[in-house]
Amino acid sequence: MRIGAQISVAGGVVKAFDRAEEMGAESVQIFALSPRRWRSAAPPDEVIEAFRTRAKEATTIEGVYCHAPYLINLGTGNDALRDKSFDCLVEHLAVATSLGTQGVVLHIGSHLGQGLDAVTARIAEALIGALEGATKLAGEPSTKILIENTAGAGGTIGRSFEELATIIDAAANDSRLGLCVDTQHLFASGVAYATLDEVDAVMEEIRTTVGLERLGCLHLNDSKVAFGSNRDRHENLGEGEIGAKALANFLSHPAIAHAPALLEVPGDGSGPRESDVIVAKKILATGVRARKRR
Image 1 (tube, rainbow, N blue to C red):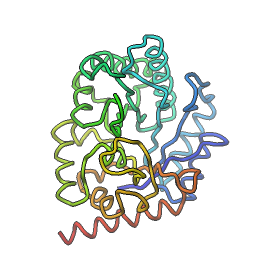
Image 2: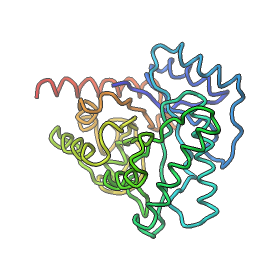
Image 3: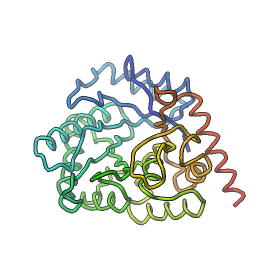
Image 4: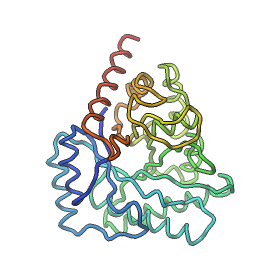
């Protein structure tokens, strides 16, 4: 498993590779466009070409991912908000595709009390439409949408793997739809993985719902809040309610070794640091050793 991180693109997206290499990250997640705006100007062609070239040169980094804005809500009943969300997703997918990334991580949004059944069809239609729209804009097949599980607050969609499978099924099981599993969200949603047996059960649930083959990446975080609290609050590894042992048990499962684990921890307030990458690699190594002794 590769250990990566959310990386700042201050000064330009290409600089993300320098920062990732300096901290020892083996995979990269970025915001290719502003996460705080509905519309952003796409990078010019020369920047896109420089990014692709730098990605090939970064031999210690395998896999680049983008994160869609949290503004997006494909489950809303508000037509204006849904249209803005759709257009925003298309734009981000197109840029991520042009940059040659492996996927765009997406929070679907909230059904806002309507219930999942009432919004499933419109979400599925939006996901397929966004992939097709991005393909047209980018002039090449769209990168994947990696739907992220949620902590389960309010009407957020994706609080269980069964919910995510329902959405993907409604989208005709399109192969361009994948999964991103966030360790903090999983814990906060009430899914236990403290022991090796519990981790095995989680993997079996993913296998029989969404499918392990759809797992594109992980978001690696500890939790500021208690198990089952349904709140999205990330903490540095080993400093939260999940703890290093449970994270080691989870990360070391062979079924997810193909997916990079991307740190989204607060660090010292500015995001992941070199020290956080080192801790993550130690936790993974501890888990691998424990499994060998099982």
